[in-house]
Amino acid sequence: MDIIEAINQRKSIRAFKTDPVSRETLTKIIDLALLAPSWGNTQPWEFAIVTGEKLEEIRRACIERAEEEPTPDVARPRGFPEPYGTRRSAMAAKFLEIKGIRREDREGRGWWRLRGLRHFESPAVIYICVDRAFYYQDDAINAWPLFDFGLIAENIMLLATRYSLGTIAQAQAVLFPDVVRRILGMPESKLIVLGIAIGYPDWNDPINGFRSEREPVNKVTRWYGFD
Image 1 (tube, rainbow, N blue to C red):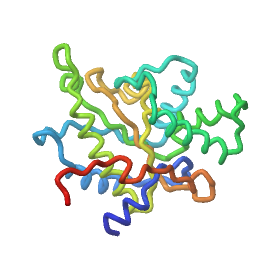
Image 2 (cartoon, rainbow, N blue to C red; image 1 turned 180 degrees about the vertical axis):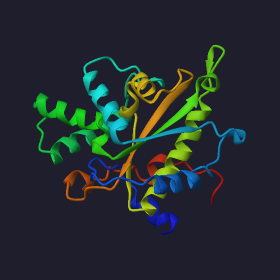
Image 3 (cartoon, rainbow, N blue to C red; image 1 turned 30 degrees about the vertical axis):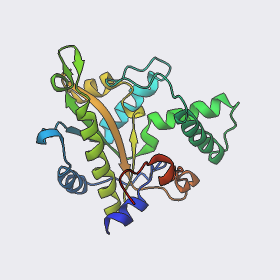
């Protein structure tokens, strides 16, 4: 599989089979993903890869707190001004349409939200973490590790296609990082930035047939110095 094929195949998966993903396969993916670039080769990432009963325990604990105000280690956006809000709303509306959930159906919308908190039943989750002392420096935030995490997360998700695996990068997976730290016995010094749900896609679920739209090149690009 070449890089263009991998990029075209990658999409956010929101329905997984129960088939487990082997530690061997996950090790191969992470091993290659580690070739991602980072600021000054700082390699700020650490990983907690979870499956089985530990993952189920995390899911149950997050569901129990579903009505609470989230407490993510990395702050969520306060709002989505245009054009970002329209893009986000259009995608969310399409999910509900595919799942046959009407906008006024609060119970159905709640069910869909809980599916996200359960990582769409993926058999494994890769949590990406950073040391608190590197992210918080004096009275400022060092945002560059987050950029580096985006690079390695994309490597992970592209490499997953090589093994017929699907992924979804979830901010929703880290709404309650204290839960993850407690259950996994991680120290408070580790911030949990992102969760990547990974597993074999359930292609029988129509939600996996959806691919979000992208803006065209000429709308998001300005060219300078070209003929």
